[in-house]
Length: 127
Image (cartoon, rainbow, N blue to C red):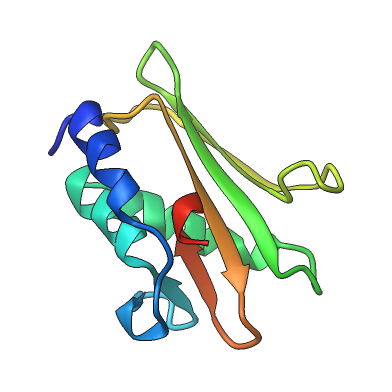
């Protein structure tokens, strides 16, 4: 697992994304990961985080095409996950408490966007 500093230092290299660069999640056939999301998944050994985001995507309100997924690691090693509309309408679609994690960063945010057929999990810089 890379350190938080290593991950944060490498994240700026991920911006924009071509459709052919995305990877389909095996467990969630309608969910794609951008190269930046894949990088975080691998560097932080956090497949569980991508699975958690993907598993909560169905809770996004019908007709919505965009969401914000945020993981915040607490000082005691637990974490809190929120999937929301990013305060546009104040809608929180899902919350989950993680009792223990070794995720190296204090917090991270992803965008989730629907293109009409698939959802894509991406770093904000890749939007």
